[in-house]
Length: 263
Ligand code: MN
Image (cartoon, rainbow, N blue to C red; front, side, top):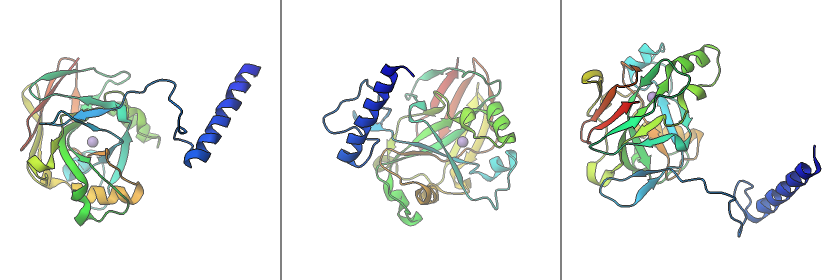
């Protein structure tokens, strides 16, 4: 190791130690220090507001509609909910009333759509009871949990993490957030996705195995939920591939449509 490298590491370690003493958390910068460069914050527009929603974490629930669980090869009657995360900056915002270009990602040859209701939290906690869970929801949005299915399946077959199939750049497509104060909570209502005008996914939110409230309760047993967390609540059956040129139209009863074009 070069001396300069060693010095850099020692200095960094010393700074981290000071930070740990000052804040009790080595992951937080010490008081008075500034970051060496800026990492842009991820935000989502809010309908009717000039202020925006800051995203802390993106949680997704897997196989939350019985017919989709079956098509993915699992038994919907016995499985507890399971979750995965996408990186915060995987968000791609899609404005209302436009068709937004969405880049076909690298590595995949089987790129799938999954239309989903997304819940956005304004507060959180641990071990939240289901009957109190919806009090933490700030609003809802339409989302697409885009999936590199071939990579996901290949990883799953080898009992490896789904990361490369789910947690890639722009893989968390989302419309603007609608505050609960204007829409109420979403426990039922049709949800659908069409590709080039042909309906592919078509179901109802009341067919979720685990409701949004139950998802929040279950998630909060495993993680401390906080304001800024968003939860993709699972997709109905008939997920399928898209190719460049396809236009996807997502509908959720009570919200404006969301549309992207694969480019
Ligand atoms: Mn999904």
